[in-house]
Image (cartoon, rainbow, N blue to C red; front, side, top):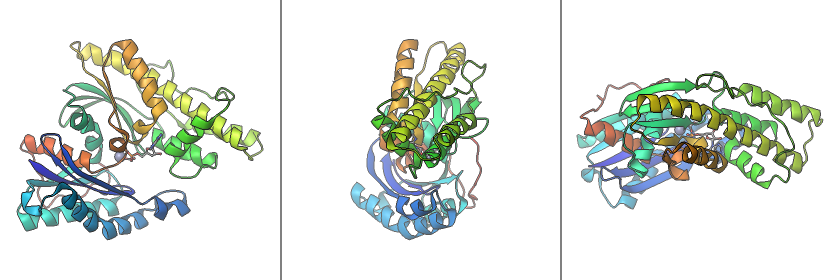
Length: 338
Ligand code: KG4
Ligand code: ZN
């Protein structure tokens, strides 16, 4: 089975060709970073126009990279939500047009399901597994029992973790997008233990997250420094923030692992997914936790953690294998919980 996948839900325009033999035949991503940087964040209207401008060209490139024509495709999958509605409409309408013209099945993929199933594309991870899904809009611990079967153990009660990275980067004057810039600054820190930050939720029962207090604490440090940060202040604060996030994540995951094992004593892996899973300090912290707990740890390659279309094509394949497709009347969904 050869499937074309499209991703247009945020600020990456992406097209990919993936087979049911877990082969990524093409995977192209165009970041709109330069379009949004002057505004310090993603501007939905600019994003929608940029998707419209670039998607056709990216599809042509993906098909050429894969060395196939539209006649070789078995289905088309596109992100159907959740996300910025203008962008989602562009991807869904394009996929429907190809499906209609070529008489192919169409699959509308939940973007979060795309992240959630990525580890099965890259590492052939069997169900069930424990998933830490950490992106710009989400922060959840889920038991993935099967395709479409997700049991939530915890979620954030305020900001998503990627959002906390982005807001902290803004407070530190690092710019946008926050996650990778905070990671770079933290790696430069000469004195990473200099600032003390609160560690929200650590030791609390349950598996929920909270990040707004952490962000406020960073703001207070910035104010105490008179609002003018030296490069060293900035790097040390970024390191403190990142280390605290990793600690909080490890604490929440340790609890979730216990719950997971009660339900599935025969085992399963700890999997991370979503843009924040590209963070190397976080990956290292979770890898050591998993090792201590005797649980396999799976983290997809960095480029498949951040938004891409290979994960959308793959989630489409997982749905198609179960005989599931969507009608061309499918309406894009700005909100779509897993
Ligand atoms: O999954 P994703 O690409 O888009 C969404 O579905 O949200 O995640 C984007 C988020 C952003 O908040 C970005 O700052 C964060 O992932 N991110 C990172 C890193 N790379 C991306 N956060 C921490 N460290 C990184 N290296
Ligand atoms: Zn995403």
